[in-house]
Structures are given as structure tokens and as C-alpha cells.
Length: 188
Image (cartoon, rainbow, N blue to C red):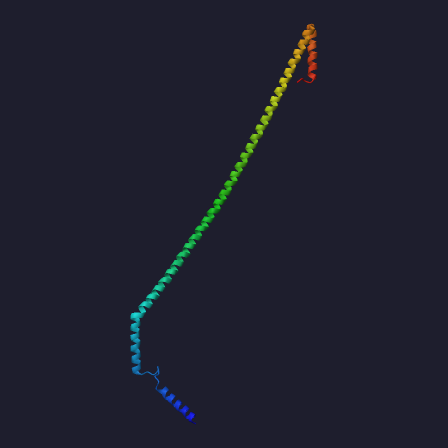
């Protein structure tokens, strides 16, 4: 029983404590007045000492963010300009490469034509040299034939002189000798 009495006593004390506890929704003039005074004082202290650094920090942060955005925009524009410049340079490099290839082809064609011309000239020189060699050989052969003819003529003359025949007999003898020499192989 004692414990029951104690529990009831505690419940009664708790109910009285709840009735005398300050209620935030209970509008009492004294509490509301001081609440407003403390609020306004706190507002003045905050606006005097706390808000300027907070607002300054916020403004500085906003400025840093804006600078970062501006820098990003500038970097993006620079990147776009560099990309456009690289595209132009690539196009110029392609044109230069095509020009170099075309010049190389022209140079190769010129070299080919020069080599063909040089080969033709060398061929003509060889043909001219061969013709000159043939002409020299022909002249040598003619000279050999002349020498042989002279030798034959001298031999015929010496035979004529040795036999001392008459003119008509001399003439026949030379003609026979010359006709025989024409069919005989030349002496060398």
C-alpha cells in the first residue's frame, strides 16, 4: 500500500508541476515583452557584429563563384578559339600536304622526262658512235682495197715490164689480172 500511496503522490505532484510550467503559447504580457526585448537586442547585436562578416563572407563567396564562372566562360571561349585555330591549321596542313604531293609528282614527272631524254641522247650517241665506227671500218676496207689494187697494179705493171709485150697484149694481161684479182680474196 505504501508504494501505491507514493505513486499517487508522485502523480499528483507531477500534475501540479505541469499546471505551473511556463507555456510558450500562453500570452502573458511580461514574458512577451521580455521576449521581444531580448529578440530585438539579439537582432541589434547580430546586425551590428555578426551580419556584416557573414554578409561579407557571402558576398566574397558570391564574387569568387562569379569569378570562377567568368573564368570558366573565358576558358571555354579560349578553348573554342583554339579549337577553331587548330581546325584552320589542320586544313592548311592538308592543303600544304596536297601541294607538296603535287609538287613531288611534278618533280618526279620532270625527272622521268629528263631521264628519258638523257637515255635518248645516250642512245643517239651510241648509234652515232656505231655509225662512225662503221664508217671508219668502211674507210679502212676501202683503203685496204685500194692498197691491194695498187699492189695488184704494181704487180701487173711489173709483170708487163718483165714480159715486155706489145700494147695490146699488155692491155689484155692487165684486164685478166684485174678480173682475176677481183674474184680472188684480198691479201691482208
